[in-house]
Length: 507
Image 1 (cartoon, one colour):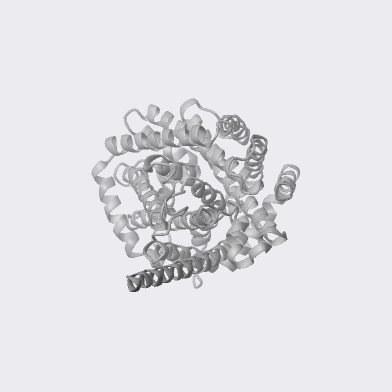
Image 2: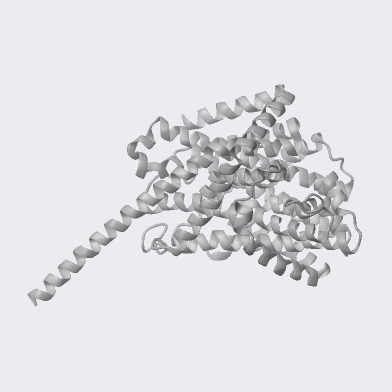
């Protein structure tokens, strides 16, 4: 039932976009504006609260609880585990925005700072760290942790609805639970389609820079179609051979590209930017987390921060489900620190290398990268690489990186959507995964044709609000379950102490 309801709803959206793309774009845009104006405060408070909740779980009294039985060991070693976290979480987005976002903020910064100044460059780096750092990984951490806890420690199905058992009991198997799972599937499908659309735009930009392929909607549709065939082949090979192998390879390619730019680029400037921005980020974290502009009515927060928060929330059921699937046997503290801290640090390094290099070229060498970002964000990375030695080779590696990120993200998404629509089955049927693979690529194509980049962004905002409410409910249910487990553990300890005292007395 969940599978067919979700298929029908998403299919209706695809038909709407295919038959009336202008009407879809106008309706989604109006809803986007309404949600940003009325619910911006809700997104900020939710994301900040979840970040605080993650640290409380890691360093509180529940941190030693295992996501599984007490004697379970982790299924994957650290390197493959981190590789799958990074590739699934936001790989395409980092490549797409790594240089383009700091340069975009440099021309149009927040906080009433004049664009094109050194202060604008500093704030541009800080907000790039903010948008891709602890907050997004906190949302992934919490959703993944809750799913892993219920699935591996409590023996429940790997479904979003199953995490509500402490609150709803058997009602999770009824219409309420099915409604929750349908919402999770829809949020996942549109969140992933957003990233697939961004990936197609970036691949098109790379092929344009290297071979002159025109940057058009038809080119992007063909790119999505070809890469769909690739990730379908990976999907059918299974989790251990497909996603694990590609994720590890992806991490290696990303590291080589990062090391290349770091080495041949302005190394000292990059390290200075990383150090300075890290300090500024930590110092201003709370202020940025709760910043709105009610007095000036500036739209910057809505166009950037709120879009990102909605995008991460829409991605949360997908990434959380996948992270939970590969994290059995880790303690809550180990899980939180591994998922929250390590990928955030890698993201900081990525933005320092690519964003820092871009700003160095803009400020010190008069390379017009910021103007290029304002005109076409997909061209910035390849324009930057073209200024370096072996730039053509580096552009080819970057394009390959986006392709493999595209494959791993889509591959993981089909796996997760298959799990969600097959009652939490950890090995969903191939036909179900193929169906979801074709459908999510179709959604990405419809979003691109109906609104381009703005259409992709709007879809994330619209589908995220109801799931944000679900995440809050999941947190409440987890707390109740952890407290019940803690009371049960203390009760058993009292019984054991009592028996021990009785044995001592008998002796």
